[in-house]
Image (cartoon, rainbow, N blue to C red; front, side, top):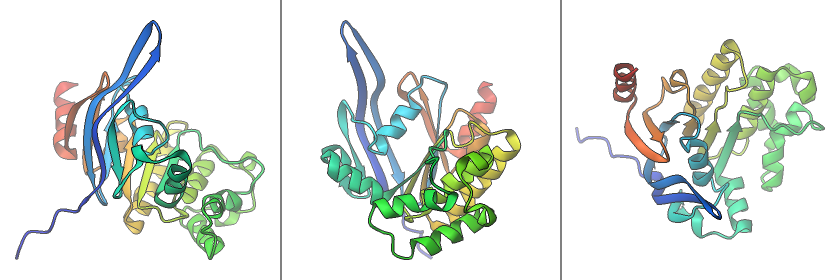
Length: 244
C-alpha cells in the first residue's frame, strides 16, 4: 500500500518579522519567522509572556500587519490584501476564540453565535446550525440568555459555538481557557478538540500552558521573537520535561 499523501499546507508564513518603531526606540517582536501548517493539523504555539506568540497568531489571522515577509492562507496571500478584502476573507475562512470571550452583551447566546454568519452574508440555515452548535456545547437550554446571565465557562462555550458557525477551514484560539478555572478550562478544551475533529478544521492554538497542547499534532515554541523549536507533540513535550 502506498504511503498516505501529505496534506497541503493551509498556512505558510515566509520570513515574517514584526517591528514597532517608536523613535528613538525600535522593538523587534518577531524576527524572521517561517512556518508551515498542513491542512487539518492541530498546532500549538507556546512561549513565555512576551515571546511573541500572540503577535504571531494575529499576523497569521490577518488581524495585524507584518513589517516584512509574507503570509499565505488557504491559497491567498493575505499580506497583499486591502483591508476590505481581508475582512471578507476572515469572515469566510477563519474562526476565532479569545481569552476574553468577546461576546456582545446586548445579544443572547444564540444571537452571538449567529453574528459571524449574518455579517458574512451566510445566514441561510444559520439559525438551525447555531442551535445545533449550542446543543453540542451543552447550552441548548441557555440560548435565550444574555452574557451577563452566563458563567465564564458558559460564555466561552458560546464563543466556541460562534467560532464554528461558518464552518471555517481554520480556527485560531488565543489562550482560550486563560480566564477559566481548571475544571471549566478542561471542559472547554475537550469541546474545542471534539468540534475540531468533527468539523475537520485546522486548529492553531496559542498558550503558555503545556497541558493545553497535550493533544496537539505539533508544538512550536517561541523565545524572544524567534522559533526556538518546532517538533511533533511527543518530542516537544519530552524536551520540555528534560529541560524543566
